Length: 253
Ligand code: NAP
Image 1 (tube, rainbow, N blue to C red):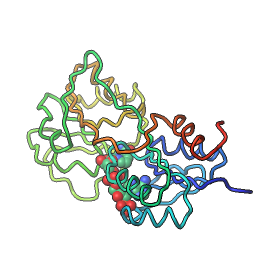
Image 2: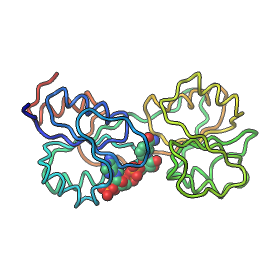
Image 3: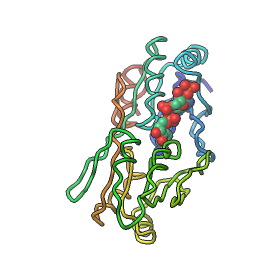
Image 4: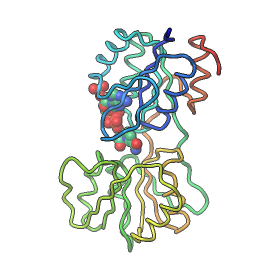
């Protein structure tokens, strides 16, 4: 079967899987790349590769060797290094690049959000409340919470942490989204959660905890996104497909 243009999807998000499916449907030969941080993962449509490229230079080599016609950056909004590497490698090799950036969450009436520029600041800002502080920033970034001996912590992670986490009152909960609203309501009630720390990832899969925090009037420390990467940005996979169709002369459906 004749393969269309080679599209590299930088994955690690639900948009990555959706992009692989969408661009395959458009006749592209799609490879999805994963950092390899989590154990079990879904198989994307098309090919998959796992592990870093070796910085912007390694990615440039890959783009040339694999004759990549388009890079679709569908990494997590907080994957700043990979986004910057993609921008540099695509500029160096003159490969078109589209960042897919899902809209950030915005506070709603009834929310008690305290904004933090990064996870270290978020750990410092987490308030002492009656119940545990529900930490949902990802296993790679929990270290600053170890210093908060005055908090009881409930840390939700996909996989258990690699290194021991030294804290007198920390419980790990290993689970992977999407998280349904009813299940989150039960979790908050069962554990008596008193506050939440979250990155502003946006999207539906992890939003329910914010709804429950609002319902219960709980404080939320929200880690703001790193600066937007330079370059062409689409707010959805559909928009990325439309932009790609114009750039590469693909069919539009
Ligand atoms: P990163 O810090 O931007 O990337 C670090 C390195 O990992 C990159 O330089 C690259 O290595 C490799 N890498 C990242 N994404 C890759 C991909 N799709 N394919 C191949 N290699 C990739 O990104 P991160 O370490 O993945 O995560 C950074 C932040 O995003 C963390 O805060 C994390 O919690 C968050 N995140 C959250 C989720 C989630 O589902 N909640 C998922 C992913 C990330 P080379 O330089 O060797 O190419």
